[in-house]
Image 1 (tube, rainbow, N blue to C red):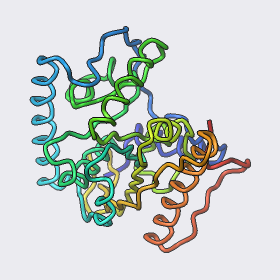
Image 2: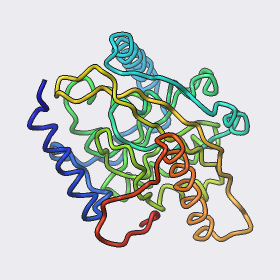
Image 3: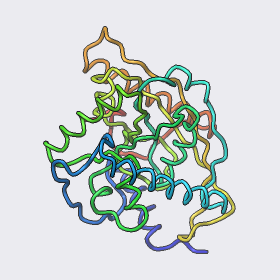
Length: 285
């Protein structure tokens, strides 16, 4: 089956953006973003209506992804490093993961499920995914314990206040520090410092997860090989109160990238190299 024009367009953009060092740019043609309004999101699920909607949406999402896994449309091959969960089991933590698919957050959820117990995994997402994404995934983006970022300063204050409550409550919050999603891109990309500043200010550990990919014999509707995921749970990185917020943010960011890089090189058996023609830092603002 030939690769679809839309899929080829994404692959070409990835090649172009890596070459130019545009690592944080989105490769997808997303719909226009409708801005959030203050008070629109019940971030901590305080309302009964939100709790009910979340339970229903999580059940629908779980059934949907489990069916995809049963059919071989999503392949979770292996989970490694579960011993690294012991030190963060009963406390809040910021979970980081490379972002390459709309399915990667479910792979993270599956990897953390035993540690989560009866809790849900909270996910920080882009504003447009919450307000403007159509269909089933739009529904899941709005109701499956998602925490949308916002272009509104007031809404961002609401988000940060909610994150403080969630971390104190012992919740695990997933963030994608690379920013945009690059479809089936295997390399770690440079990380945004703001993700780690959040962990430092909230005094919670960062739990790095890196997912490696292998082509399967089956192709998807776009003609691309379906990927088999190996989820690598890496050692948590704890804040250092002897450092300033800025110093510790940088330290944790670079350690997260180092762990991802080591995992990439060990799993694929080759040195991590980019085609980028300009100099770039692995931790950026």
